Amino acid sequence: MRRFLIIPLLLLLSACSSPAEIHDTRFIMGTLVKFTIIGSDRGRAAAAIAAAAHEMQRIEDAFTIYGDHPNAVKAFNASAPGAWVALPDEVAAVLTTALQVKQQSRGAFDPALGKLNLLWGFSTDPPATSPPPTAAISAAIPPGQCIEHHDKQWRRLDARCLLDFGGIAKGYAIDRGIAMLRQHGIANAIINAGGDIRLIGRHGERPWRIGIRHPRHKNEVIAKLNLQGDISIVTSGDYERFYIYHGKRYHHLIDPKTGWPANKAESATIMAPNATLADAWSTALFIRGKQGLSDIPQAMHGLLMDRHGKTVGSL
Ligand code: ADP
Ligand code: MG
Image (cartoon, rainbow, N blue to C red; front, side, top):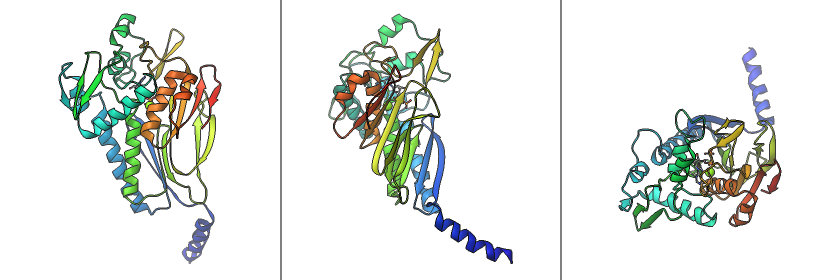
């Protein structure tokens, strides 16, 4: 008898509360990737998330320079300097974007930094705990002109030029993940890969609410945003992959000019039309510090926490 009383009560409750959020979390690209979908039935959302996660994992495998699994990027890095190598269209497209950001950011973002990144070892397993020798750092700095192409053929110009998509591939994976959600008919969603976000649509009757975390205080935010439509927000910070050695912080965002971790900022956030660009530019802005704010392309916004803990710029 009691069952018949409970059902109308549940219906009433769900009519009053906000629309149901569907969540799922996967471990991809070395980080927890959180999917949030709203305004869709569970079956459709589950299928969409499975497809998006699968695509993001495919991209990690295609772009990573770590691990034993062969891919075109590792093969390119192993090619003789000067030898022409065909790259898959997808890799060539992301590389072309990366090289454009390199040029526009005056070399602060450099996808040919792989030798330095491998040397510093922040992404190796286990990660490094002390800096490499200074002479090895100097020897790993890539020359300004490193990679060139002719149609689909690409080549390394020097043995110091190793591709590393660590500063852009996560953003690209998020963009592809959103494309998969849309292909499955999802209109309102967020993909949040460890603080790197692309959102589409709205949270029911209101915009999505996004917080940008404080680089030194995990539970504090430096900005709160109400956003809707199709917006990407990516943050690069010195607080995710780092160690303290002799009282000094060493982290995974390397200034290509010096070969050492950049020291102008604690975090850099970019709002952009897609996550690929937001990812690359957040790394670039982190390296350049506040001087870099004026080089961010139109249609993007940057917010920086400088090394003194002061925020500069706006989103
Ligand atoms: P995260 O991946 O932690 O979110 P980023 O998007 O800023 O942070 O990318 C950091 C990664 O980018 C590093 O692990 C490294 O692979 C690569 N990287 C580091 N410095 C640079 C740089 N100056 N230009 C391009 N890529 C970089
Ligand atoms: Mg980045």
